[in-house]
Image (cartoon, rainbow, N blue to C red; front, side):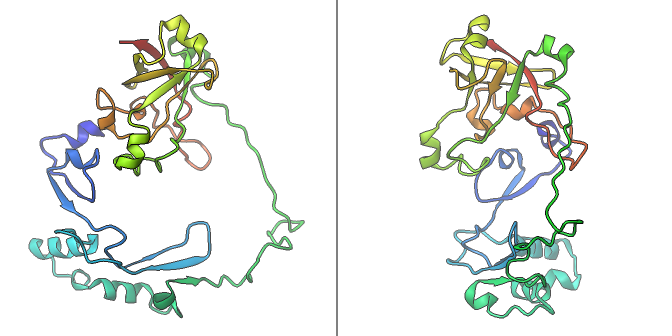
Length: 272
């Protein structure tokens, strides 16, 4: 992906609030508004509430909502479809057409009536023979961690748990959160560190056939023997060679659900 974004024949435009790893690869960076600066309607995620987002402040500097940027680009490119002249309020009206929003704009939220009552599954009602929820567990063996032949070349299983103070990679550029955990590291069990000559605080290279990354090692029995723990969340620019742990992870997806397999990853470690 990084190689593709650096192609000479590709013109990259990024709309952002911060100079992220992706923004650094752009030919042009356009300042985008934050949630505090634009009007929006947010769909539910794990709940039944629709949320209205009213801007708290005017857009700062030259920042614009994505919708306004698209309208301006469309005008410069000569696109004259009616949709490109719709204001944000008109877009919201179209989105909510036929929906009884009630006090959505004034109160800020509206609970969607799914016709199941306020507590739909208090008495079961899951559509199964018994009416109770039914769970099925299907074990799919890992593709790499269970591969004995691959383990001869890359004997450590690498997992990438979240850090404590970032939200995935969000907040990694914020001074308060970043200063509390300023640099990435990997955790090795003392037995694994000993056979590789790795000492606490050493700079190490973690690698496999897909790629590599460099950071400090922490030797601790917080990690199990045979497992390398590489917390995620730092940006590429925080790593000595500009690459994070994702440089080693597979793009393979699970058979069920097509979920990523970031934690099914074999690597090796060497000191620098």
